[in-house]
Image 1 (cartoon, rainbow, N blue to C red):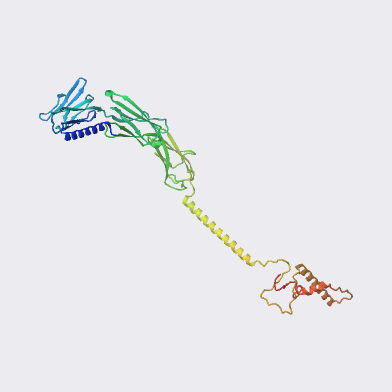
Image 2: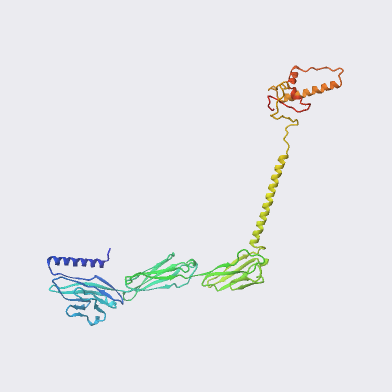
Length: 472
């Protein structure tokens, strides 16, 4: 929505257009004076009071003037006559003038505006034969604020309590200025207003926050808005947070070994305000000979020794506090590169030994497997002929062993047969005088006759079973 003054100005322009239309249609006499409803002037600067004059074609402008309304009455401050020119009273002669006087423009400029210039001003137009037409405007004086930022009353210390970081002040403004803080911190603002002379007001906004070192160097921004300012007024404020030293030690890389030269350790302290005290000490014993402290650096002026191992402390102090940092130094017999080479060689040797061991075991297994004799199942070796051996002639073939004869029966029959053969050989060598002959039973004789080829094989104890050319 448009401001009230702009809406009034548009309304007046509409009225002028309507008046012109009526004058054209009816030929009537018409005049119009257009001024803004309100004008804001900045203290000490110039202000322009516009007045546009719309005069009909049948009218003649005789005079235009400006009057000011005072408690005692109205006074004329400027007059323009097309025939005689301009006229300005002595009290305004040095501060007021017509911008471009004509029958259509009665605008004036008032310089170096003060609080005494506040009031109502009327633009009057005299035409012949219609007479006077007028319109009024109100002049208001704005006071541009004086803006500045002041630091808090106490220093900002890391880890301290909430305190006033800074205060943004818009001083002696009319109307009061709008003041705020822009920041990404989690602080809070407190607004205070104070009345001053001539109806002006001072605005103060304090920013309260708990300091922390992590935002050291960051900035807050004070923003001021006021009708007398053409744009927002912005003032940055840089934070200054004080904190104790934050210590770091440079130089020890964990690869200090006996005989290493030109080694040193440097103590760094990040602090606000800057650190002014540095000190190196050894905690577990006295500082070894050949070691020197220069400012914040611990110098080893000789090759490292085994007894240089120990705990060293660096102390740093500033106006806030004293801090320290301990470093444990271990002097090795060899450097990391030498230790790595030793480990590599040892690994290679162990790998070679392991590979040789595996090859030896594998060779032994293969040789042993080749020299191992065939496995025997009983004390009687059954010598089976190869399958490609041609069978004996049909006349020499032994009768087929019945399928019903088991291995136990074969063994018993073979034992009986061998006994009979031994008995026959004894009889041949020593004829018996009187020995009863025990004829074998029929079943035994039949079975032995059928299995005789099984029980005797070249006079040895080997057994060969030929049951339909299959092995048993």
